[in-house]
Image (tube, rainbow, N blue to C red; front, top):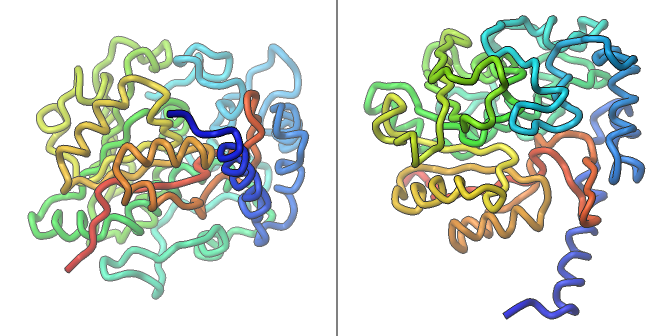
Amino acid sequence: LAWSHQCLCKTWQRYADHRDELSSFPYFSGWQTPLLQKDCFTSENVYEIYLKKLGVIASQEGTSKRNWWTTELHGWAGGESSSAKDVDIFHRVSFAEGFALDNIEWIPQERHVTTDDSDDHGLPILNSWQGWYQLRQIPSSSPVALLETFPLTLYYAIQHYGSVPLTVSKMLERPLRVHLVGIEKELNFIDLFREVGYLLPKESVQVDMTWIVREDMLPQNSKGGKSLSLQLTSNLTLTIVAGTYGESVDPDFDLNGSPDMILGLNAGLYAYESWRHVVNYLNTHPNVVGVFTDYNEHSGLNCASLGGSKARKSLTMNPFRQPRAMPVYCMNLPQFSNGFIYIFNEQELE
């Protein structure tokens, strides 16, 4: 049975009514304001102009300017788009090189943080962009949140929903194992995820992170390879594996141990058939926590429902969503990168 027109319209109106709250980033100095206006709802032009004025992408066609911002436009297209085709996952860069900003004060320093405001595992408690900016001593005029949404959402998932998995991994005297599925544009800014390691306690928490990338999503210069292992920080390792989770890649036997947590950024679990394997794995392994983000509330609610009523009810706005309204070409719903977050198999310490 389909929803009635009357019911559907009221539901979508409720989604649309959340636009103001989703667009609220009061801590920032105002640089984000043009990126949240109506012109952004149907076009990337405003964002492209902003990035050109920022000096991080080329202002003329045919000129090359490779950094972490270049995959912010024109999609991924299986690693073949104009912004993705030259991505080199084997090339390591510093934060200064990756952000490519003229104002060095806008860029977080590459060092571990210290704070008294931490949880039982020693992880800094972060629930807002303001908290992270102040912890990292970055001025509110810095636009780095546009990219930091990815590592900060990952960190937030571990700190906010990973207490039980962290406790179990410590009891077993091994690192926390985190599998990230559905990786695409993140391949352009691998080194940005060092931020997760800098936020984690340097001595007491170790994380083994594995990215699983479908082979048809790899950029051209990476096709044919099976894995890449990196020590991002002293407490954070990254392994990139080519394959399809639960199909050509067995989560329990092919990835250095079964996961404690599975994450998907901007997942859209209905978008690709391959997500079915991830959902099935979580449904048959209730001890594994799954954390996913989605662009909009309608998609997030439907995808969360695949994890049952508790997962559906867990859907909430992500405090580390990107401060930018994304274009939506088929429906007038608020759309933000990592806009909403929801949980499968949420666990609590007893």
